[in-house]
Length: 314
Image (cartoon, rainbow, N blue to C red; front, side, top):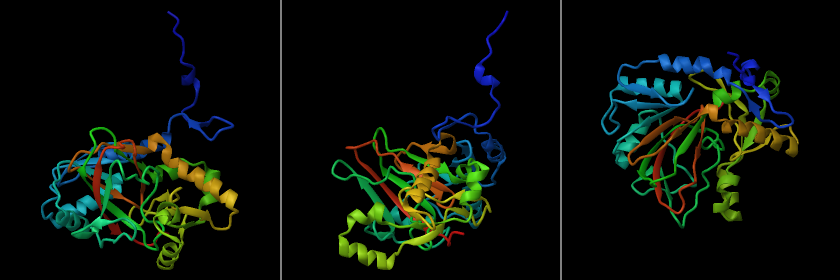
């Protein structure tokens, strides 16, 4: 009996551009090696269930409300570098315990724009409801406008809506490796100016913006950075904080920022986390971007985050 052949099966397993657009279709073959690597990893002190193709792991067997051993902390650090973002369920962290856990991985930052938990200045508090909107649903990494950006962040859910309010994370190694050779050659070595104004400038008057720019002037960061622990290259550009590309005209720079920032929107590079009360996400700000879905208004969502200070991107 003659069977029809799927015409798509005649296409070689590769990405194809749908000209004249920038949309790419076809299997994302460069993810396979990392997917298999993650699937083979094992840890002594806990188990990890893989979430996305190359990003995200649900950790079981660790109680973050206790004093963890140095061995467990070291394994979690290694696991974070591997999976880029870790998820934990049923972690009833007090503010003190939240800060104590995050501090096991480095010094903590004080955010100059986002209000903190009143008892713990290291915890920023995201409290959204009908009267409070959020500038949150844009792909970004945290504070690249600081000379020394965040290395990692620990986010704890206190109140969550019945539906909505998920957070997505994107593997920016995969985003870089998915670019064609010509584009990678073009952007390697480029520098970008990062600034807080688009995201936080609206919270200040003109005098306030001038004062904050004196303290946090626009900073030059690499368009492609090298992760200090994995040694891998990744995209370090986003539409929220990247203001311009050094040496490019405004139009050309904006076009490149838009194109590179848009790589985070590729679903194959992502994982998505559905929050529950006392869920925790622990992500590597050097390797991922994140996007908080703003689909739950007018319902209430309350989260607290501690951010671990990193190093100067190179």
